[in-house]
Length: 323
Image (cartoon, rainbow, N blue to C red; front, side):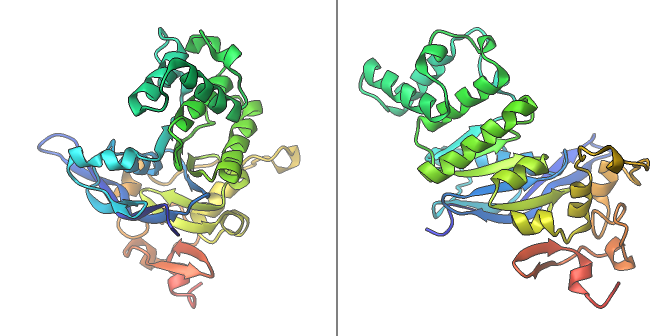
C-alpha cells in the first residue's frame, strides 16, 4: 500500500453574515495530498490558513463541500451512518490536553471505557496490562497515572496521556492538531521525539498540524505549506524549508526568530490587507503581501507546478521568463 491516506481536491466553503449580506469564504480550497505508511507529514501555516478545517474534515467533524477522502483504499461515504469505517485505525490528538479530559473524572476511566467500547480486553487484569504497555510507550508508568485527575498532571504529562489513550486501539494514523503549542518549550521536543519513535518502532503515520516550522522541520518527512485555504508549496521537508520557492514559505521561514541579538528585526512589519480580504481576493491570495507580485498575480490564480520534486503554486514558475 503506497498511500495510507489520500486527500483529493478537498474543499470547504463557509457562508458568513446575514440573509442580506452573505459572504462565502472558501476555508479549504481544492487541497490534495497523501500520507504514506510510517510517515510523518506536516501541514503548516499561520493561524486561519485552513489546516485545522482540513483536519476536521478528515476526522468527520466537518462535511466537505467537495472532494474525496480515501483511507486504506476506502472512499469516504457521504451518509453519516457509513462514516464508521474511518474510525478504524485513526486517532486524534488535540491542542489542549486539559480540554480533552473532564476535570472531575479520573483519567484512567477514559482508558477503561475505550478498552470496553472497543472490546480490547477480556477482563480488568488484561485491561491494566494493556494500559501499562501504552503508558510505557510514551514514557509514563501506571503508578504515576492511576487514581489521578487531569489537574494532577503537568501539560506535558497530560499530552503524553492523550497519546497513550490514542494508542490503545493500535492506530495506523494519528492526526495531531498543534499538539505541542500549549506545552512548555522544554517539553516540546519530548513530544515530537515520541512521534518519531512511534513512526520508527511501530510504523505509525502522523498528520502533524502546526504553525511551528522548527518542530515541523525536525519531525517531518514531508511538509505542505498552507495559505488562505491553498497549499502553496509541498515536498520533502529539507527542500521546502531549506530552499523555499514560494514567497510565503520564505516569509514564514524568515519570521522564525533567531537567538542572536545582531539579527533582530529592525523594520516594522505591516500587512497590506486583512485576512478577510485575502480570502476574497482574485488571483493569488498572497499577491497583496508578495514582494515579487506581478500583474498576472492579481487577476489569475496560479497553476500547480512541480519544480523538481517540490510542488509550488506560483506564477513565477509557470512563466519562468518573467522576473
